[in-house]
Image (cartoon, protein in one colour):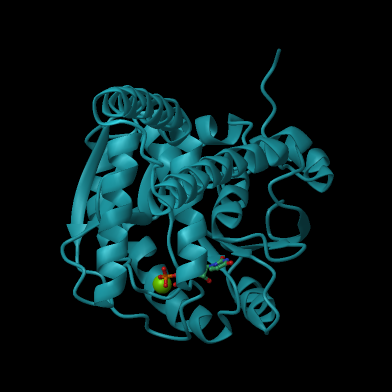
Length: 335
Ligand code: UDP
Ligand code: MG
């Protein structure tokens, strides 16, 4: 069986033969964008300079993935494309979420190394120079690690740290703490990601699973330069659930142990009751203890059902096999 790259739109099928003639960029920067019209120009102003310096004459590309923006984001990118053909655009048919947008970018980027980079300039593009140096030294994944989380709200700091700890306790694939999506990945890593069939694209987990020679570079993360964050706590919670359920089955297995422990405890309790009745005569056990035991067990059962549901829901999504994203349009990809 041959492994097909996923999510490629039909439109690109006939663009493929020309690919050989096109110069392969040294670096592809992938910028997922959702309603970021104000951020495009400052982003380009800074990133282009960095890429020119780092690539020193070799070709590069910046691939924006428009994740269903409802503002003028696509128009701003299109205008930039007319000025500089190395700026390219992939427009998705609606908002698919950042992880899907990143997948789309990785599927369509052609560089020998691929760098996902948020458009809000929170991750300083200057770090790319250091990443490329590590890549040239033989590493396949160079991930950015934040030196501290001072620019984050304390609640975000605590919840993020809780997530990393529980994820890494439950899963064999350890996600480095304080690493975001900003990283450099070699072409061969990108090809491995493209070949993965799963719909659930929790990128950090996939990188951790893939292995390869990885190294970290540290940097300071800035405040968002323009616009507002697209993530709220509910979205982050869902992302965290995706991360854990996609890489660990511990939450499923734990219920056998909880069940065994409760059953064992109830046997011991039953034994105690028999002895108590024989020694002290019959006393009708109290209503409160009965209620407590019933409610407790009912709660435990509902929780376990809920956990099961989390997995079943995800199995449904995988089983349907719908594409991770749909491409509506593109600019400059065939050049
Ligand atoms: N983003 C996206 N699709 C979404 C939400 C966000 O492509 O559904 C992009 C967004 O435009 C930005 C990047 O993902 O370039 C990171 O988003 P944001 O800065 O809001 O996240 P935060 O830094 O607050 O975690
Ligand atoms: Mg941001």
